[in-house]
Image (cartoon, rainbow over all chains, first blue to last red):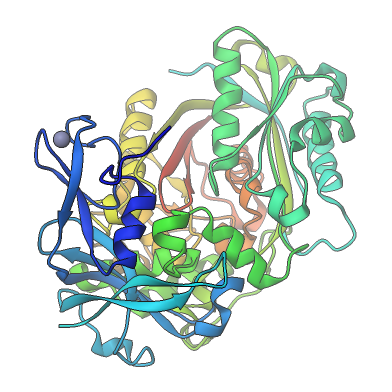
Length: 137
Length: 386
Ligand SMILES: [Zn+2]
């Protein structure tokens, strides 16, 4: 089955991330912003969704500092993972950089953060890819 | 109202089992449960077996027929139930529904997990698969990390403290001293709990349940026929399950589990009981914060008051509502797929007044709260003494 370039698949979401664009799926029937993206609107069950560019501005809903990681990220510790509520409404989980992970007392729920992108090695090939991260605003 | 009763229970010690294979742990628990019901394996008509990930931990899929065969039940319909850490509570629910439907009369509900075959980083990676792999695990969140996120949100909204979290661990370790099947039968001090190695801030090692091996099994049948098998059966009067989004991002509240609140409401309705009627509960304390949130979601304390309640000793053995007399997942151990049925076994012993030094004073009812993964599944059972 051929997937349209603008169809709100997870694969297309990560293609947009690779182009340094943070987008949510938007329901064309009820305007709901959907992130992580879905093929069907959780609000009205419509399939007619399109991409909507997000500002990348948001606030910290919660976070943690990972000190013991699984096999894949054992070399990264300690690192911060945050749940960010974007100004447009939906939330997303991503790493939070430019903050000392050993001073978590200085990180506050509700703090303003901004989306950015960093280059990482692809877990499945030798190529590099971009991933979404956040930094303090 | 549900008309199913427990007539047999068996559980291995929880902990590290280097000398028993997965199927052997299962066989030990299954045989004990079958014997207690005065039955032989040939009398069991069907089995539902909870297991999270024998595929990752032991490189074994399709475990239900293998487990049944090695427990002497070759050929019966045996089905694996997977709902992350709530796997065996959903297995019990399936067994109850099988009896209530009229298909079967004598059914086994069980759970088994052997986690220590895999080195710790592999266990952490496997458990993280119970979160959204693409949108949570890939950015780097771990399973303790998920509950750390809930802890940070609970602390920010209600002022819950690290000391209150640590108090959960101290209480549950104290209870497990009297549980010979517990992974850790050792009391710990508040200071030790507070200074343990950091795992996922603000959760330290003593905020986390251990990596355990173990199995648990119960035999259930129609309440009308239960006395045929056992002088003192224990009635199951509610079996409820609710689910939620997998991904924390899709939830409006990070300080409570919607699946737990919803399952609790359904369970109380089925049993025609209110939270105040429940004298003790086994709740899913995979992490200390999870117990505090559970006592709020189950209606024992108001939202935000769970931390204060444990600090004031209200959840101790002789407290207002005893929470985790077995030692909980924290100290009894958490062989993931076995946990839900092990909780039910604690209810069974408590309601038969045979829990020894951890016995709650003659309880009429007990509640078991089993949470899967990020809280995407919650299954709740309420039991009544015969
Ligand atoms: Zn819609």
